[in-house]
Length: 298
Image 1 (tube, rainbow, N blue to C red):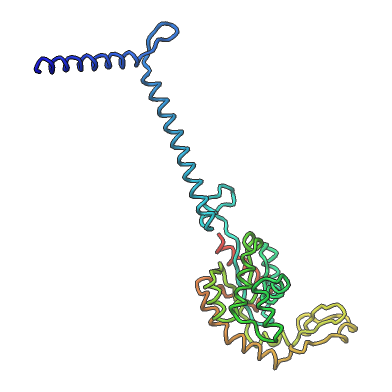
Image 2: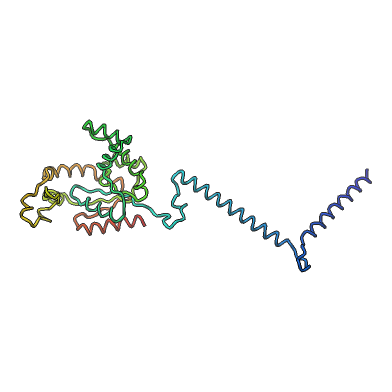
């Protein structure tokens, strides 16, 4: 048995020696000129290139997988986009102001400058009803019955509209909504958030003067003001009409309703609220608003 063990050990050593010799010979190759060079560097280099390529491929697959996951959930789309617009935010704005605060004028300016979709609840309700959407049909039932459309239905209409492609791609401007703290809370619960809440602050006595002095030309629809922009033509002046709700008594009632809710609504947007002096010229008011919007979008 002892002789057999010694013989086996000798055979093992012979095999190992042969393997070592083959490995050493394989490490060199003959060039066309007859010289010998080592292949270790070439092998290592090829291995490194292959490893790098495989790693890059794996990383690319990981990025694609993660981007697909993010896109399916609406997350990180800007970060995953390699275009020059990556990371840019579209404006999501709310503007509030009492009757005759100049809100309509500023909405037009904002819409023109930023290309946002200008939205009022009246327009959205009418569009939803006309389109026959689920919430539109719900709203229609209340409207046909002569009842006020409840907040949950209005929020549904607003949320559906804000989810449409034009609002998602270019941004939006909610005009005079939310009107109550309950609507502001419901809007937040629905996942709707804004970048900037703009409030046009105008004293009541100025608002009353603006409203009471308004007159409309029934032939052209043009609005004049008896103090600030009266017509120069006597014939036009003679045919001007005053809207039935543009009296001092009625405007004061509307202002009371406005003030009953506006402070609470403003409280819902304290962090993004910008208060603008609405007694200044439309151009000056616009400058302040644009500066505020540009600051939050920067």
